[in-house]
Length: 237
Image (cartoon, rainbow, N blue to C red):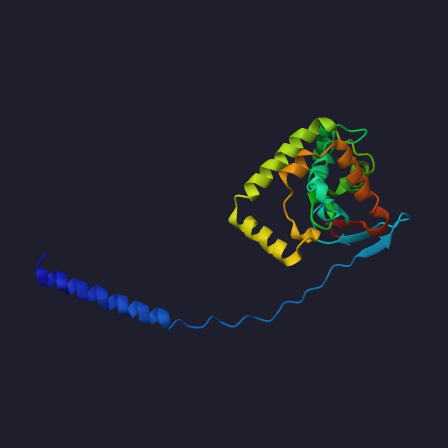
């Protein structure tokens, strides 16, 4: 390739890049959005049981499935400073069986309904959720009631669950986002429970099964006043 030809190629490439940059700078405005579509909330039924528990039934969709969610308004905010993390460990212990069902039997019961038992622990509430085939809706409600009213809380599983939590804490402390969040919450809320997002190794290690049982009584004792049971029946009636 001659030097003259090389110069011509460079000139063509330079011209193309200038034109592309100009075209990019003159990008057309996106088209305006269309009108908002109408949204109608599904009809629902709300009532309270004799013990004060609030129940909401929401039928929607056309899938033969039922989502059952039970929320107890107690969580990490109800921990003492000496037992940070007890809510998280207790939430995991509640999946380890009931007075009449071992951990494996509990898991198998949920699996037969096409589901698993999910327990979530948050700052303000502890939730229990199952998504089951529609014919198992009443059985799912009974299973959740058994878990809350007759938890097994086996001491044999405590060491394993505490070790799992300690690993989660160690991982969280190595993540920049978690480090920044912990600092932000401490600056924002100070000594308020909202100001602490991670337990300490000391509080987790000193936790006993008696502490877990006491916390279970704390959250289940609130169900008559503030608990909510939501059943989303996902089939058309």
